[in-house]
Image (cartoon, rainbow, N blue to C red; front, side, top):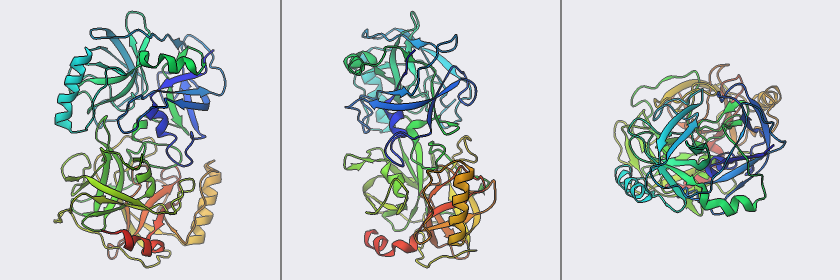
Length: 486
């Protein structure tokens, strides 16, 4: 029985970028179920390999494999897919299945969905992608040598969460493509897949068995990953950054004029992290948010920051970025010194909806009422909302937070969680059912009484389960921060 799962390299990258730079120890693959969240048989992953020429910036050579730690048992519900290395041109009827979003910005599907579509001629795809890119300005192109395209009609196509799935020929069921990237879902632009025939030598050179598993979902902890390409946040049981405040209320328009949304993506404009405007060119955020979109010596080209709106995916003013500065002592493995700044290419115009947040370097003790806002998930594994939410909470005494976090790590079986360090971190706690979640990373923690920022959302345990939320303590970094503000 095979042990090899064929997927997109960017899916593998999404579970290796954060924390320690290797595959998450809680990564799982599940086979034999049409529901990503129940049924089937789950396997651990022993190792992985991404194509050596995979390019995060252009999403080229976007192919990789995961190797299960034990052989996968065949059954009527689990079978390897046959691979064809034929060169597939236009006009070939094909089928693709996945648990991706039901529509642009919508929730992921609980059940496996399929779409019958047709490949298009390579020259047509190049031209259609070029036309779409003029409208969407993603700065991306297709390479017919290594990619194959399909096109159905507006309202039909692949979307976030379908990444890594198989594109198969209808006539014989053989796989010839891997879902890789595209434009905002089902807008009438082509969907782009890895062309497997280009990578025949690489796949065979690894000496893996030729039967690849199909209908496999990646799992982090107990939560299925519907959009692995969006992973920019670190909350230890899941990786989808499209998330929002748990137990919060909708923020009034203009109530958080310092709020910044970090967005990126070639597949669709995806929310990554929050941030705060601390000068007309400086955005303060978490270092782990920057690290996830930084490689090859620069930020990814599609990264943008949006100000002046409570809805990250509409309205507001979008700015490009000139550079970034991450704290030199940032430690990804433990999320310590987790702060950095993004410098915009031009001044951000201030208005009643866009304002610089005042920073306080006072040491904040326990019992201080604080406000945090974000576009994070409303519950663990819940669907995303694009509306800004806020939560009023209060700070904890340092040693109390250390004790609570240590107990939570044991109770939630998350013994790899880093310890709290009160001299550089500040904690808040509301009650079970209220707190931060994925996507809130990088957002400002502010005093209720005067609106001054004293913390940055950094990390936490499974969302709103009665454990503290951890923030960067800004007062510990006064000298560094004042030196990098533009």
